Amino acid sequence: MKITCTSCQKVLSLDETKLPMKPVLIPCPVCETKLPVDRRNFEMAAAAASAPAATHAEVHSQMHEEDDGFGAKALIVGSDSPALRQAAKLIGFMPVVIAAPAQARDYFMQEFPPVVMLNPAQVTPPPLTEFGPIISLTPADRRKAFFILFSENLRTLDGNAAFLYGVNLVVAPKDLGAFQQIYREAYGYHERLYAPMVAAQKAMAS
Image 1 (cartoon, helix red, strand yellow):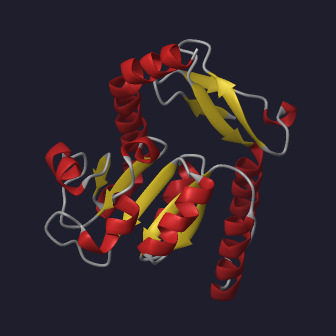
Image 2 (cartoon, one colour):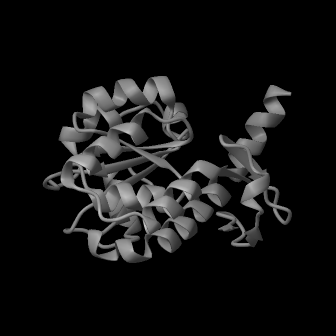
């Protein structure tokens, strides 16, 4: 299988048969960025590709199994969406859907999922008051996750909108077909932006 480094875009070839059936961090040989890889995600994707179409009930059953699974999580807050759950899997995370922002905050503070996907039923002018509980975390806690806001009314990669809404990335659902590339580029920029601060924190801690 192939994965792409989120920082330097190096394409890595991995022999999935040598990976354990649990999440692991693979260092990029070029920039040493640690990339999360979960062999089970690829096993499930292969099984899904060969299996017949699931019924509505089976889809919901599968979603709950995914939510209870181990591995790096992507927290989807607000409206549930099969497209967003699929987008989370494409970037290597197991989707967990929690509709209520206050409950999502409680989950975040316990699990610290690396990706938080906000999917409001309707986007109001900033700030996004309804999502206040999950957005208004301390700066230290916020830096533990990459926040993405999905909205038909906003333009993908609109940096001004992302700043006003207090997220790292804005994505229009119509662009989900290119989500893997969009996320990779935005996350790479995010990592480069915070790299000096992270290095300074590590130096102070040592």
